[in-house]
Image (cartoon, rainbow, N blue to C red; front, side):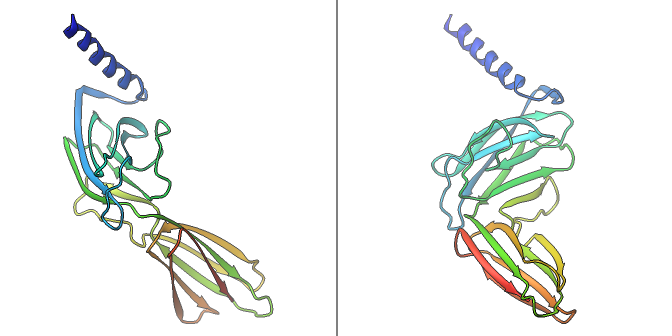
Length: 227
């Protein structure tokens, strides 16, 4: 009697999991994947309760959270045809509670791969930092400015199932623009990671390129550039 009840609970769990999947998900023979790793901060300290989610084209396949030591071990369903994506501290599915103080990682596959183990190793999440960069037109001068902003995004996206993938998103995001003498003041918001630098390259009146490195020492940072 007890064994039949346990079998019923197991069947109910599987049916509930499958019912949460989108209509486009094709699971072959209840095939499973193992995804494991560890999440730490930039000082190497373990980050507990960080959500880890697997999906295929937006349909969730499995989810867990890191334990007290930052480790996670997720047995996930495997989609038969669509590529696998892995999300760390990303709130895409089930309104999963993320840690708003830390950055996120998303690993995207371009195609389905017959692979049953994903050892993600150690994943580092940095504390969030925002920079409000003000581009201030002095008005009296007739200067023109072209600029390029390089920074490390707080929402890091990396390829999965490729040869020799990058390990981080260091200075991978870029914003560009140009300012005329008649341009109004602008405020550019950049979301990055504490301890990183934002690189501001600019050229005044088509002259040589100048570089300013703006350190992100706090959760909220400001910098004013005048031209």
